[in-house]
Length: 141
Image 1 (cartoon, rainbow, N blue to C red):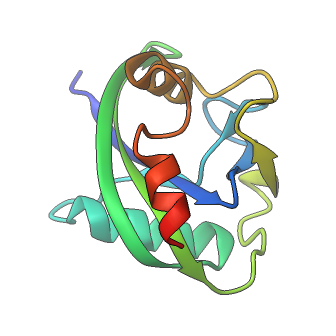
Image 2: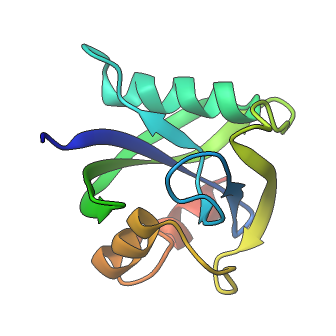
């Protein structure tokens, strides 16, 4: 079976990161970023913007592509590509309550458990949750 490709969108605002508790799919009960599957022929950045809007009502004003991770979840192989959003517009709304219990701005140093496996893999790869250049970027906004 071939891997499935997902996109996770880390939205960072004032030192907090947007998380939702998954439900109704693999990883149900895990805390995760907005995101979803890459559609056939879709650009990764376009997928990140689409998923963010569909799930949260937020529009990314700026978006940077980040690292990727590889995980086996419930016997399926997933490749997850990450994007970072530092600037956005709109009002935060849980647009898909059948897939998410609600969105919360959480302190990056005090994360809930359990985390969705790709986020744990991302943290191992980056040596923490926030991108290394986050402090420099935060001082610009």
